[in-house]
Image (cartoon, rainbow, N blue to C red; front, top):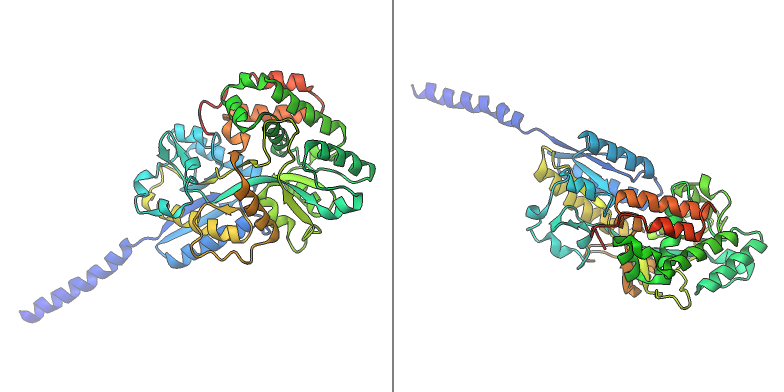
Length: 424
């Protein structure tokens, strides 16, 4: 009888074991992103973070899928509209992501952030992830836009680094006389040209006035905004920009600058790592400086175009909310810190454990410029609502192409709907 009981217990134990193991299924989380260029430090930082997670978490695996830039925007919008979005996905912030938050597509994270992780973030960096009082993402990097100047070409043309708009205009004219393209933009993607009007408006009208005008577009009718449009038109007529701007996207624009074919580019510090790539002709030859001030303008040299509005978001319909949140926390912090060291951006995470002694020269310049900033305005196309954003980019493109006069441009800008208090 005792033998029967022992055999029964042993048999039952052996019989249960495979059933318990069978219940331990591997959770696979699909993650979409836009980091695919091998030379991009954000790509490498994300790959490193995904690999580390997958190696250490065999029960929760990340299946990452990337597609570049503008194509990604179309892909994620289509997927969200069709209810086919992955578990975790990269999104631009502000007005790009807000419609999907408002529609209930994205998971609020507040109940998952009571573990002290917010204390690891630099104060104020979480604000761009909060909408209507709820937190939807965690930041990785802060980006600022600077004027990148190829000192080799400046020296060749006998031109000094511009500190004022008048200096910039004079430099443009000199470069043209010397047969050097002054500025390269990739207006096929439209947003690179938009940056030029945005920063000119910020220098002419001041940051506060720009934010107010984006909320109440009739304010774009103020004289300062017309003067900014006139200055952009003046630069166009002086030959500031490359003649093939409208057939060139961001990647081609960056390639042109890296090849030493233009003296200047106005971009976010995500270009630092590309400009200093060992294969680039610009390595060690470029300096990043604040955009020139406008004498008599209301903007200051310490006012910057820039923000930390991008990040990863979680599909509210994912079957694995807890697991997805754990991954989002890990990816945001790990890629944010490692990406900073690789030149991807200025981190939103406190510097515990970060050794930045090997940081590139341009990245150090970006960090230093960031430290001098006293006022920041985010990328206008992430502040304006989606329809306004597209209209604004198109209007700037028409101004650059000479299809609209500054007066016509401003008249159309006053007809935008306004940001409806989305983000400052």
